[in-house]
Length: 405
Image 1 (cartoon, rainbow, N blue to C red):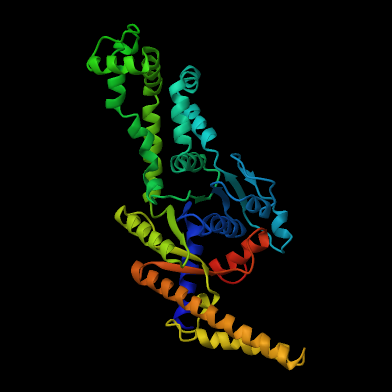
Image 2: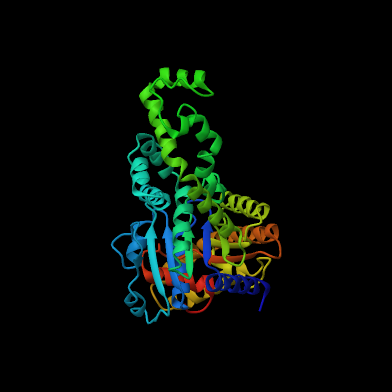
């Protein structure tokens, strides 16, 4: 077995170990690299092998839902009909669920879950400041993904959670999202807003007592005393929830750092920008001592995956082998001039394809060198068509895990 095949086999074994042994696999990377499709493919393999799996996606394409046999994905956890697999001659030993993150509903669920009683919950949900903050935070997919992860992990309903994180302009946002709200609801912030309310009780709309009176009074003149009172009411209501937010953030933080429970998979393409982002995220994982070191390179040239020589010398050989096979198939068909024209066009196409694939192979080798011997890089070639059905997802599985799913 040559070096390239050995490296691919080692990466496939590492991926299989991740979906067999971990409780959480997090797919990270920039947009447009096949992260959502990869997450679905990982979930499928784990379910086929006997695990109870849920794939949590962020705004997936409708065709992905259709490929799993669903009209659409929503915030509810929906099981994929096992008959979908049986139609392809497969018998899943486990179960596969899927859901799409609804950020606003998720935030309301968090408030409902951490509220000590119905009165507190209703005060928060009905507060105008909460509605504004929830609209703002619900646009933060990284924070909501962290909250949903906490709920699913705590439920113990699944052996494996595959989380498709949102495309991140700053790729590290998700790793730090768990403590965002807890930091916002910091004791010092809450205390400052509650100073005008002795013992948590209003002492009048003039808000003239306590430290910070001058600033508070100035803000009241700018925004109106009713508005300032409503802010204080929001903090009065959320003060009792702070411990719940902190506890959830700490749970998610421990989970993301636990190498026995979690594995990060960095998904990218051989393009230079995507490779740069993959390297950046790998460095961030190392600095935070999080369980990374596993890459999936999608949309690579087919020769980049199966070149018989790691240095790329075998690419031209593979191109000629394709050409010879096509030439033999054309023998005896059409006119000789038509055959020559077709073969000239084919030669031009193969020359360009081999050159592009050599670039892809060089990018993949560069990623392996950067990540070091302890990292694994699994390569998935460009497929002849977009992924819109289960057959396409199973094709990806064959490249991710080797052989038949």
